[in-house]
Image (cartoon, rainbow, N blue to C red; front, top):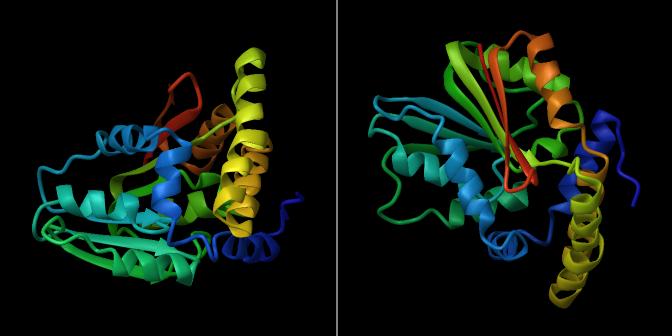
Length: 240
């Protein structure tokens, strides 16, 4: 599978890849990660101070998995905004709003992270959950996130990365390119396509160390990098 690198082409490609899989997305994400995705999201959320009202932006929110957990922990007068380029994913996010769990106002916006439709200095936190690889222009997205963050606001991302250990990477690559697509084919031709994209996007992904260097280059301070679950995912943070 060839993944486009240009902004317009990749944005269109990612939108198509995540169309027709939106209804099963949450269930299959839990299945293919052996429910570790829940642990990874908790680790990201542990970096957020919910002691007072916040305005939080969840980029590439998909079906709202991180968005709704954020809203469940936030104070009553907070605002959580989920942003995604896929209208199909956003429809599911709106339809699956959990009853009694949301403690604050939640809004969903269809847009791309590289061109955010918000004024500057608005959000206390900008989060990205398992979707950093999907951005066509990470540098532009980091700059936009920095622009919309309040002074001393934080950017937080947890995402899959390529393993450094060659032996572990060999086992992991077999899982990505053979086990997961086989599971996908049992569900639909669309999931076969989506999981193949997942495997390829991890294989060609920018290293977590390089992402951290880009954050510093853009202007973030107090950047940090934490590898989780044998290095399968990385938690990155940077403050405005």
